[in-house]
Image (cartoon, rainbow, N blue to C red):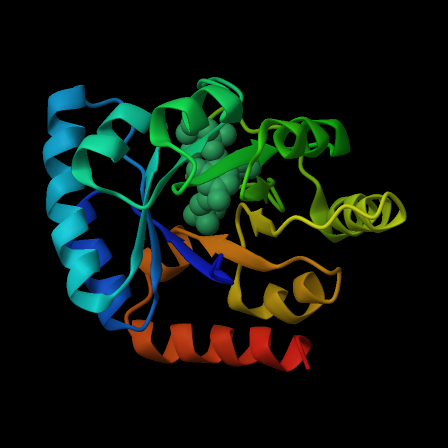
Length: 207
Ligand SMILES: Cc1ncc(COP(=O)(O)OP(=O)(O)O)c(N)n1
Ligand SMILES: Cc1nc(C(=O)O)sc1CCOP(=O)(O)O
Ligand SMILES: [Mg+2]
């Protein structure tokens, strides 16, 4: 089952992951950019231990070999990484493999490659990721969801990029499965309140 609320980690990764889990988030993506692979591998092992304590799913960004070695639940790959199909070969059929999309065509490719979910963004401008694809906004995400519906394609779509708590109801009404947040949760003091109010909004839109 793909969670409807996903936390994407930021520096002070282990502390932030612990805090996200403590606040009630049960899906974590370890996203460490521009660091030696041995450091990412060691952080992945520690992140795995934290997530195991909370029964949280752990996804490793960009690095299927590290994900597999750490016993993570899955991996997320984007345009500048290996393909979902290549990542699947490394991770095996039981693992979770997610891919990034900015267009309907990207999504269709990931579906063909056997993705379990697709992260679609950016919803709005964000400084968390460099070299952003074109901003989709609510209209862009809605248009993509309508096209998927017309094609009868049912894959969990996770919106990402600059998402704020107030965006959640409108975003969920486009038909997406859930959202991924990074800066919002990282920089919020009352994380428990934020997570529970977002989860509440997500649930209300699923009734
Ligand atoms: C859920 C989710 N969606 C999209 C991304 C972005 O992945 P990618 O395009 O590979 O960019 P980086 O995160 O590697 O900078 C993601 N990580 N998670
Ligand atoms: C990791 C990532 N991928 C994106 C994409 O558009 O593919 S946007 C993004 C950053 C998400 O962090 P925040 O919630 O702080 O904006
Ligand atoms: Mg990537």
